Length: 76
Image (cartoon, rainbow, N blue to C red; front, side, top):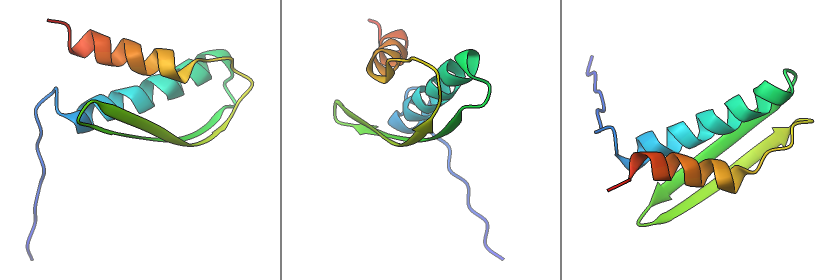
């Protein structure tokens, strides 16, 4: 049996994308505990794409959430 594992640095685009998706979920659940969130975030080369399904009564701004996460992680 062959086993493999992937490890990336904390500022790798995959990690940042995971943080964005998690933050969208947290924002929805903080306003509507019955939120249904299926969000995928893809990023690289200064482009972030957020896609998926969102059923919630929460009022959130996904672009602002993404900007906050990226800004928190890439301040110089």
